[in-house]
Image (cartoon, rainbow, N blue to C red; front, side, top):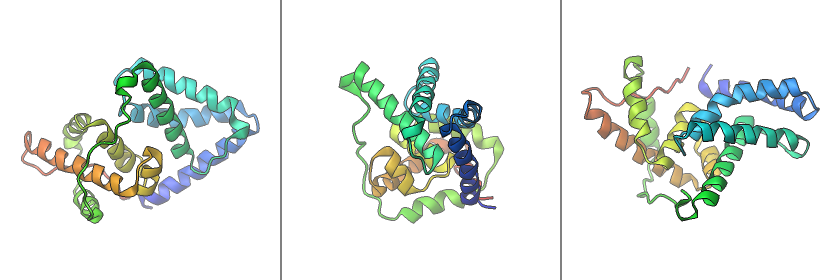
Length: 203
């Protein structure tokens, strides 16, 4: 079973929990929230390193979704939760620091050969002993590049889904990923003679 199939099957499970939640089953919503929490937390670290702020934001988001559950229509549960959290975080940043709201579209060069990005990563082998180095390098990326990498290679989203979530076009997503991978390769070479190893599990 490949990653795309696993994601689809997981969404079926999450949708079932969501439908129960909409009917008023608080236990089902708790299970849903538990399944989504780590993904939400890890995603939020693309925006801020304030762990307490992240925890509070997720708690506020979950309460809001529970209260509004009867009016919310969801097709892909993880994407909905991530997009809702992203919007909430950006609203907080705008309110608290309007001069630096993190909303500027990152200047990226045009990279039309999207398949180059896919090939560079998916053909790399996976070595667990290098994951710490890769994760450390990812943390040094600009916020929008880190966000795109997380959604693509940790959450398995396709570029159209990422574009919708990040509110940019598909080409911008490809550009962000290309710049991120180029930067990661340069960074990793500085500490190891091995190629950049990104942990993409194709099943």
